[in-house]
Each structure stands twice: as C-alpha cells, then as structure tokens.
Amino acid sequence: MNDIRMPPRHVAMDQFGCREGELVVGGEKLTTLAARVGQSPFYAYDRGLLRARVAELRAALPRAIQLHYAMKANPMPALVSLMAGLVDGIDVASAGELKVALDAGADPAEISFAGPGKRDAELRQAVASRVLVNVESMRELPALASAAQELGLPARVALRVNPDFELKGSGMKMGGGPKQFGIDVEQIPAALTEVRRLGLAFEGFHLFAGSQNLRADSICEAQQKCYELALRLAAEAPAPLRFLNLGGGFGIPYFPGESRLDLTPIGANLESLLERARLDLPQARLVIELGRYFVGEAGVYVTRIVDRKVSRGQVFLVTDGGLNHHLAASGNFGQVLRKNYPVTIGNKVGSPMREVASVVGPLCTPLDILADRMDLPVAEVGDFAVVFQSGAYGASASPRGFLGHPEYLEVLV
Image 1 (cartoon, rainbow, N blue to C red):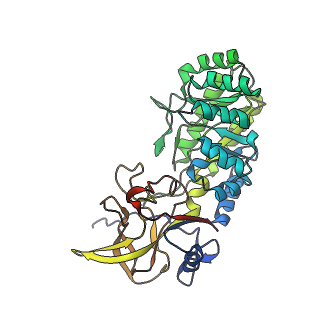
Image 2 (cartoon, one colour):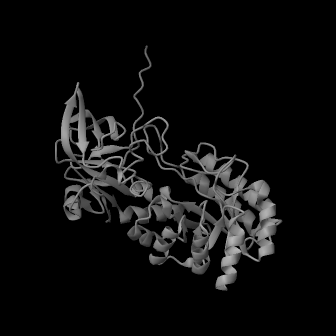
Image 3 (cartoon, helix red, strand yellow):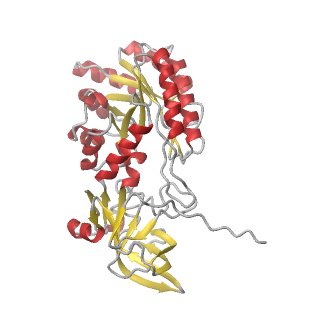
C-alpha cells in the first residue's frame, strides 16, 4: 500500500475574522477598509491583535520580565505610539528611530539604542536624550565619553555581547562566530576596563543570539546560556548589573508546515532564571526584546488585481504592488529557497471556486512574485490579493523606489 501524504499547509490565519465572504481587519470588511484608505496597495495593522499579542505574552511570561518592542520590525509612527503604551520599553536602531520613539511618547529611561556603525552624532543624540546605548564596538566608548563631558550628562551604556554560541534553529543568526553585531565575548573584559576608565554609566549587558525561531527548546537553551554568560561577565563589571537583555528570537509561522511557537516552556524557563537572578543579580531587570513576534501577525498587505492572464496554462494575477512594497513576501529578504507566505483573495474568502494561480507584481523582473502557484479562490480584475504575516519587515524593509511605481499607504485600524 502506498503511503500517500498531503503536502504541508500554512497554519490557519484565524487571527482575522471573516464576514460576508470578506476578510475583516480592525472590525472592517476588506472592501470597506480599502474604500476608507482610498488607494491600493496598502498595509493594514489591527490594533486589537496588537493588544492581544502583548496580553498573551504578559499572561504566558513571568510578571517581572520586562517586554521591549524592537521597532525595527515596524517603525510606523502610529503603531509605535500604540506599542509604547503597551510594553515596558522600546529598542531603536538609529537616530531616526529614536526620534520616532520619543515623538511617540516612549519614556527615554526605557529606550535602548542598538546597532553597529552608530555615528558620533547619533551617540551624542543618545546621550542628550538620556537613553541607554547598547555599545557594539570599542570605538563607541570614547565617543560616548566625549559627548557626556560636552553635554554634562551621564552616558548610559550596556555592552552588547557577541557570544561564543548560536541560537539553534534560528532563521537569522545574530550572535556566535564572526559577527558585525556586538563585542566578542573575549574582548568584554577589556571593554569593561575602558568603561570604568572613561567614567561611563554602566548598566548591564545585551545579548541577542538570533531571531525567527519556532523551537521553544532552542530559545530556552539560548536564554540559559545568555544568563550564565552575563553572570560570569558581571563579576568584572564596574557596577552591579541593573539591566540584562536576554534578546528575543520568538518566531511566527510564515511557510507551509510551520506551527506557532509554544510559550509555555519559555515562561517556565524564564521563571527559573528570575528565581536565580533574585540571588545572583538582585538589582537587575530582565528584559525580553521582541519585534516580529509583537507585530508580524497583526498586519496584512493588500494589493489590487489589475490584470488576469494565462500563459501556457498557468494563471497569473498581476497586482498593483509587489516586491517594491513587500520584499520579504517575494522571497528576496533572506530566503535561500523561495517559499510562499500565506496569501488569499481577501474579498472572496471561503469561495468554493478555486484555482491554482500565481500572484505577481507590476515590476519588470521575474523576482516580483507574491504567491507562486498557490491554491486560491478564483479572482478577477478588481479583487484584492492579501498577504498575511505582513506586520513586520514589510513596508520599511522594501525597495519602494524601485522602478518608480506609486507608493503604498499604511493604516492602523
């Protein structure tokens, strides 16, 4: 007897509702929302889902764990303003993001500034803004000391450590081995000596081993290793640790066969680390820094079908937006072998009329593909193709000026 197995499917995109055959985002049917926006393509982010995700994490993780939003995942000002009121802190990766976070009302005392290649002017802005700088290079230390002396303000610093291990199962490894991120752990003692010599206001360590991980056991292992490493390094620190960022790495399911992350073991692991920290590091706040996990599943990219064509038996739905607005969904933002994001025809959800079709953008390149031969509701010109899991690394991570097509809009509903 042959073993016939069904091909893997995307996890159900059941975070959004459906009404009268249409996707519902922020309480609005898709066609109504499109009329309200006034043009396509557009990104829409659901406030209710953003609030629910933060509440879900609060319930699953120990109360003493602080949650920081890494706004590189989605720097839309209205969204950052909402998140600033829901989480305990904001992580920024440039002076531009710092301005957005401050304008959004984030408390400067709870803003951290990470990223390689910080310019001296940016470091000066960080000191003037009284935010915590996650130092990624020995070069940053004297520049921070100079800014502090000039401004008469303390330079708050945490050292970002490039550990000697990686986050197993991570879609994007941010630590371990040669990296442009952080200071190699072997150099941390020398960096701590320099922090002491320059009189910088040392607060702690930042460790970020990797991102987009769906394996709870790997995340727990990385958190344990990061804690042990920080505890060892703290013995040489010029002041007691007040801040320990254990990174994030929480992933969301994008591709067929992937499942949502189980938070239960992560919560239990963090509770055990907190119990240890009460004795080992009594003044330290333990922080989890997340971007994609907060916002990724709360957003959709909506693009209108402008042409339907059949080429040698294959159906192509040509839309008014593509990789210029959503590079990640096209497979050109880190994928080695292209895989489909979950996609549907947003105004024909649940239609029994289905076909295998490809959704492609308007750009003059064969790379401009949003869905490659997917099982979709039969669509016509004027219908809306919707890409799920688009709340993170969508709009701001795409080459929107490529080939001069019209801009997208973003709405928070």
